[in-house]
Amino acid sequence: MSILEAIIMGILQGLTEFLPVSSSGHLELANYFFGIKGESNLQFTMAVHAATVLSTITVFYREIGQLFKGLFKFQMNTETRYIINIIISMIPIAVVGFFFRDTIEGLFTSNLLLVGIMLLITACLLTFAGLAKPRTGQITPGRAFVIGIAQALAALPGLSRSGATISTGLLLGVQRSEMSKFSFLMVLVPIIGMNLLELIGMKSGVASVGTWQLVCGFVAAYFTGTLACRWMIRIVNKGKLTWFAVYCAVVGIISICFYLF
Image: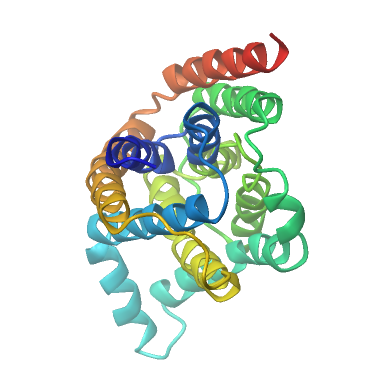
């Protein structure tokens, strides 16, 4: 992997982690065209995922601080209930991670057909969510669990995590501003946990990505991720998801065509 490729893939991760167009799908496409495979790609993926976690913390540091402040009052307040809902939302992805991890990882083989189909499904979800009327519902334990199922399904390459979770929340009647915040906060612990598991399971002595490639990819993912996160919040609040649905449909069709021809 060259430094230019690292920067490009870092930008892809930063933008697509928050925009509803599937970061995993775009990285799979980039892997296909750049021919990047193996353990080195895993290390790079961990680095750019860490960058997007930092992006989320940067954007929501006030909200995160408020949640911890309320939690350490050790009483059942608004912040404690919110954190409980986040924990509930993590249950489905935890089940997938512990019991189906190898199966999911086996799908990340630059399979353009699977990526294309999942992108088309993402387009459908975004279309339905864009047509839904604005509601004023809040996150409840039941809604959090259903949204968590959407996040677990988004482990498939090409199915956008933010697109699936935000669309599901909006279709369940959750307020737009509330759903955008919850979608980004609920993924922090799963990403950190996934990186720790990958780090523990990583074989020693394998070829790794160069230091400068990791640094450049991390920096590119962090800055573009921070911008994309702020942008996505405004997009969800305004209900303008249609163009992302069109984009996912076009890229999905292109992916399938590359696979077939």
